Length: 64
Length: 402
Ligand code: HEM
Ligand code: SF4
Image (cartoon, rainbow over all chains, first blue to last red; front, side):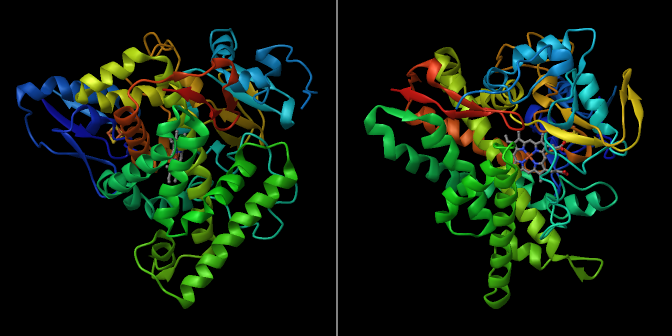
């Protein structure tokens, strides 16, 4: 499973970093930064899904 | 004061956001509208406005910034003549800006509020919370709103701006003058002018006595396309810091204290489980979202069957959206570890709160510090709690005993 963020829709709610701090951080503007490029370790998949479900802008894209 | 307002005939066609029982508890009214056949209510009061209450509608409106503009963001029209009067050009960027300027108005301040940038205020916020608690802990009773919540954001903001802390009461008075007493047009005008004149003097002072490490100085030295930003922008951002950063956060902290005073089980959960804090703060912000913002309709348009006219005011009821059962299971219940929480307490779209990381930090530290020193407390009398509402909802007096 991989994650990415549509930076056009991300407005820096940081809900992703709250739900999955191992996977999402913040850039210098406070918008999302994906911390893990490529496949996520399986144990983080649940958290990444939770991050997706908490993003008010629906900016997180999960690809299996 | 006797209430001379005319009784509300129907929430759907005659809502009154300043009606005292709605101010104290707006949620039943929001539900009534949201679950009716007409989830976007209309009123002719205060020169008229629309009130969308469903999550989906509020979020959709927030995305359409070309139609629903931020020329006016207050829930009541401005005092007559404000735009033409002294400092008419000073607004509160980026909240009052529309694209294309909104982009740079927002871009310039974002780095100041990124999570890594606001982390440096954690210790000073904790110290200030402790100092407030020192004042009343031996008395066994305190006003969690007026003795505690109210003092926290204004001191944090003063510290960021680099202005003396003894301005606290004055700032609080000005902010309430602008946001809480909207019917008093003279007071609103006076408060706004006082804010602008105060910061103008601060700017002038920094020209002769340059300083470092304060936001006013940073703003004054910021350049866009090789030119210093205009003074209206500097003053506007200072104005914004007061009106967006103080009442809002103080209201959120106050509501959280009010909630915790009545929920020993939630205090216990937080005490026993440190990992719960991040989702708990988001959940409390969802349920007690303090802020409603307005938009001005740019051109005649039909939105969800409502015939909106150019110039109409639309109230972005984020607190109503946050309790929409279509979006949140058991929306009126506080579930500290709620799994799915796309709440919009901080808005949505391009104007989404730039100060949210600071706001979260303040709410968390305020509650953590209190719970550590005063783990058990309760309301003295639920009936004596007083509230502000309309634009910003939160308790203004909330006596607790411990
Ligand atoms: C719990 C506290 C707070 C809440 C609930 C809150 C809520 C909001 C909301 C709903 C908006 C969107 C306005 C709109 O759509 O028109 C907003 C915008 C904004 N807020 Fe906050 N706010 C809080 C605290 C703060 C603080 C502490 C600051 C900074 C010191 C701040 C700065 C801003 C700014 C700069 C904007 C405008 C962003 C833009 O237009 O691009 N807020 N806030
Ligand atoms: S929650 Fe969504 S909008 Fe917010 S920072 Fe993360 S990706 Fe961006």
